Amino acid sequence: MNKVNPFLYSNIDNSNHWIISEIILNQCKKHPEKKIIEFVDGPEWSFNILKDIAFEKAKILKDLKIKQGDTITVMVDDPIEFIPYWVASSFLGVMFVALNTGLKGSVLYHQIKLANSSVMIVSDLHYKDVDQLVKEKKSKIKVFNCSELKSKGMILEKEVYVGKISDETCTMFTSGTSGPSKGVLMPNAHCVLFAVGTIENYKLNHNHIFYISLPLFHANGLFMQLLACIMVGSKAVIKSRFSASNWLNDIRKYNVTHTNMLGAIAAFITAQPPSENDKDHNLILIGSAPLPSEPERVFRDRFGVKDVLPLYGMTEVNIPLYGLINEKGDGKCGKLYHKYFEVEIRDPETDLPIKDGEVGEIVVRPKQPFGFMSGYMGMPEKTVETWRNFWFHTGDAGIKDQSGSFTFVDRIKDCIRRRGENISSYEVEQAFLEISYITEAAAYAIPAKGGEGMEDEVMVALMINNNMLIDYIDLLNQAKKNLATFAVPKYIRIMDHFPKTQTGKIQKNKLREDGVTVDTWQNKNI
Image 1 (cartoon, rainbow, N blue to C red):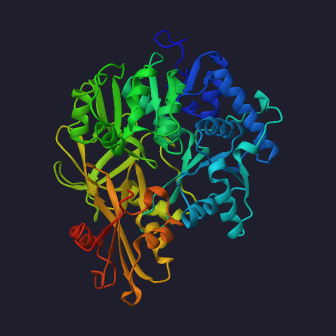
Image 2: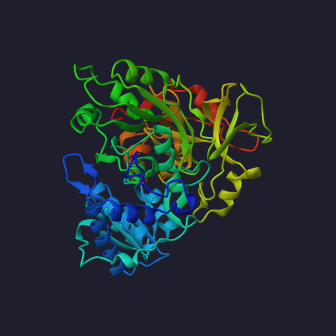
């Protein structure tokens, strides 16, 4: 037993045992009464309760004829339901496909179709729309309302499938750039390495309390935070939906010591009016991706948080860059987590290394076997494309200085990042092109006010038939049928013609340079 931390997963240093089902079952057997999860304004779970509820959900899945090697698609808001289905899937050796609950229409169906599950479990809130969608598409997938699935017992411990570090245990979707969103196939070791990175770089231990307000259908919430807590015995305090106005109250009420956030969340919190309680808390560390200089200063000075660490990563590549404890971020992305990764800045055209201080593309590769995604679900050509010359190409431009710190500069990819979500410009364009009088569409990023670093607003330029008069609200409502809530444009511009290359490609760089023009319509509801 580890004398420093008796709750630390005993095989954390042996990557042959970086298997989610083995980790969770091991922790549940060794520390059954340890309180590991507390839901804000909800129940508190010990490891034993987590195991029993997961065994019940596993029995539900078995009754639905889900077996080892199958895929289950889940679109569930409530973490009290989401977490046990995730654990149950790992116990059965079932691929867990977690969908963003903000998705709608054709974008949602693209992901459902790609997942190719026989069964989909959906929250009450989304059930009617999802069920109608799959029926319209004549899909064979069976959609079940989460609240109507009742357990008829539980599986036995001997039925738990342990598996291998190479087993693809989870799929999460990330934005496409020149095409539809892509499903990232995540092996056990890849998922666990997210957690190991948090534990090692935050020096996380069983005395800490981790506040999770990010969605669990993203790797940050599920693996960097929750799985890290499970592995180290730190209590996870889980908020079902982020609230800037309640953030400090929760931090204080639950004696929180650690939390993660995204750039937009940091901006929302620092925009809250100062209060006499700003420094009356136990919070000692915040990890944020990205971490602009101004929010970092506010968290350090106004809130008195000792360590505010920048992070850089992607669902595909894990978190290869971390800020250091006792070191300011100063608008940078952090330094190389050299134990498990290689990161370089290379020329995006030639893939050749470039000098420190010069702008190039951030490329990454792992040292840990299966510590990266194993590919894109059903898109082998995209896997090969991103892995050109044996480096994963992030599509992000960056700089490395002589001290070894990396700085994010801009995107090379045609991708939009808004409030922590990566948005495919292609999918935004397709939503508008389904409207009969739209002839061409170009979606692109406009820097958000106060969203330094990597935060954007969505802008779409459109060409229409016959110079007709546009009702912008009606136009937007039609597009919303096939857009996630976070992908709805803030700005719409109607144009007579687009700037194009000689080969007919829209020059979005010129549209971005124009910015928000006088003829741009603004969505006041965003």
